[in-house]
Image (cartoon, rainbow, N blue to C red; front, side, top):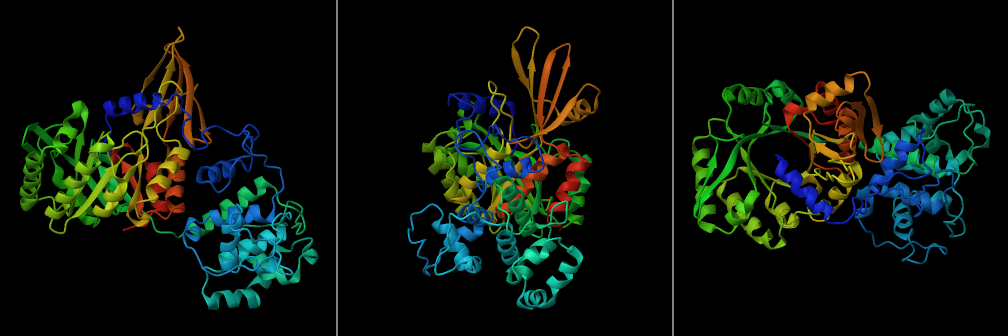
Length: 543
């Protein structure tokens, strides 16, 4: 979680070795035909998660109409938990017999949930027929009604929808299939499917791809709005100014220690020297944490500069000495720590996986019931992290889904498509309720000098916020990165800064909720602004 320049530089070099800044599977480039309008953010947001996709030629074709099977795929993909579970029931539809057909699993899941039965006639679903607006309203209304209790559903079906009908007063209500009214008006009541500017619902009109993207995002937002999500803070490096924000958080990692590995067979837990030593006046921070009843872990940092961490992982006596040092510190433990958070960074070789896992297992066994969390980077470059084994050992895994920075292509630290790709990869082997999405409040700056040369910097958040407020600065929120960008010129040249602000943080929180993760972590608390914390407060479960 604690990132140093050496880490960033190594990541940049490794990334450059791939030959392209766009070597990932994620949709990092904009669609050539998607302009900034009412649907563009929904299109890109759903493209990030794979709920929608382009047409394979760099276009999205948002005005194209949608078939029944295409919409069902989107609706089911919008809830990953629905697709996870498999059923053994048969689907006796004469036009959906091919189990290898691309839409079969999605249609089957919708069928098993009782969503599409109203569209079936003579045992046919007619998957390639254009879906109508009233069919979409029934599908979405039915899906969301299923989250209600039996009594709530019955009350809506008996009379609730009639109240909505009287309020909505759709101009063409008489054209709606009468049997569709309860579900259609439930969708309408939630703002999922409403009439147009003229007050018409247009029940028999086809649905465009861009309309579908907007509708599906609303369905997702309705699904996740009450979903619990923990806020986890890293308290380190001048964080005291934000210490009172612990009231919004459930878990604090105190970055007050490092691995000290000085010689063969010799290693200790160092809490007294270096950048991450226990600060003077630590008692005040601990008091605030205790007042807010947050879970407290000691974060232990180590970086593999000059291969020291790799050497440590091959040195069994040093590991034993380190674990004994940890036990000795915790025997005293005036801070009241109830766990340890391991942040060992820069392990590159796959051959080092077993050694790191073995160390974590030994450490966990020595903790006598204390919790263990482990921070892990994206494994695109750092192959030394066996995510499956780490997930089995740790009580919590912090996914550091950032530092994708690439000098030549000006790829910033944490574009949302790459964050999503990292989450999807981790979820294949780590239970979602153990997984925390790490968010790093940072900025990446590129300066094109007057002679044409380009240099990069990593400015402080304080300076970035000040720059954004100055005259001459253009600030825009850019998709598909879902990051804010500042551009300006001065005597040094032309500047481009990508940075995390409240808006980009909110989209990352949305992604964590989409996948029903345990929480989001904030590196580091001192960097986050009042606006950021307001967003975090809105979307996380309070202690």
